[in-house]
Image (cartoon, rainbow, N blue to C red; front, side, top):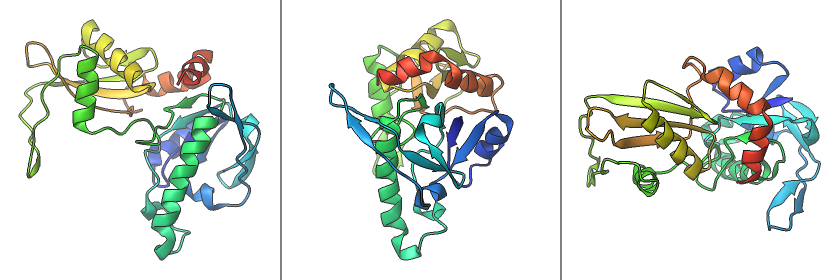
Length: 241
């Protein structure tokens, strides 16, 4: 079965779980329910993988081996989502849930799109400076990030073109060069889903910003994500991370 990991108030995730066949929704509320069992086995390369165990998905106990892939839409567990937890305990419980999900998602054998990092559960939640540095290291033209005492200084961008990466596909009205740059940055960040923006009003169309996210409302993106979760290549790419 496919699993969508998302926030409790993510209406899009709920709609996807209804439209996609054999799919269930996992939210932070499930993490505080009885039935979880997380068992790790050490690998020769120092990593760990889940050897059995159980998860609670939409209130039901599911064997981990039954999960074929996970679409991860949860950037972090926030305390305001934990309606079943006492107010004075929410911050602590949210921190523990984040730590648990980081361990659990990282150790699963099945494809996870996007896999977590210490900087975010749904891929690296980098600051603009870090994204810009990573893009520059991939030889992508960048626009300098300016930040003063009052925060980031945003220059006017007359023409902002956005490209969405889903696995090996790109969506958006950008040329082949920017598509190749987008793919390069996604691989450097270790993610299958990435949205990037370029300033196409400038001569070299510099990179502006990125986030490990994909808008499923863009035509073709939803089907591309579903196909990615079903393809064997997803397993190969996740295993390399």
